[in-house]
Length: 137
Image (cartoon, rainbow, N blue to C red; front, side):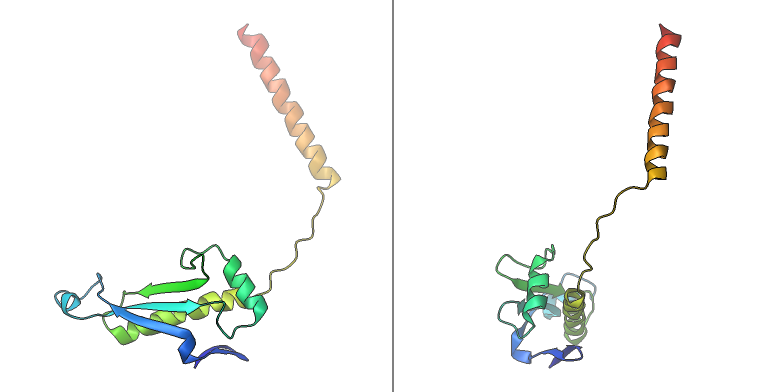
């Protein structure tokens, strides 16, 4: 079980891990062992709530494919176990971000003072340009 937050957890069969060769630190050890981890998580087939799935799919993240599969590659650490922990940590962070309900934007209008300030700036700039025009002619 991967615990995301109270009441939300993922079963082990929902997350797929694959070990691959890493190109990070480790010297010759990198060439002999598969320390990098590629995590695959299918959003639509998961046990997440529907709203969370929708927010995850709406995220503009290059790690989410068009098919709704999250692919995370972790290769910074030297051991496979630590890379696996790092990949799970990143997945948890993505899901926790999708758990947050975005606040609805309340459209506002500019105040009278800000409108007046903008118009005064425009007038001043216009006068400055007119002065330049007469000065160089």
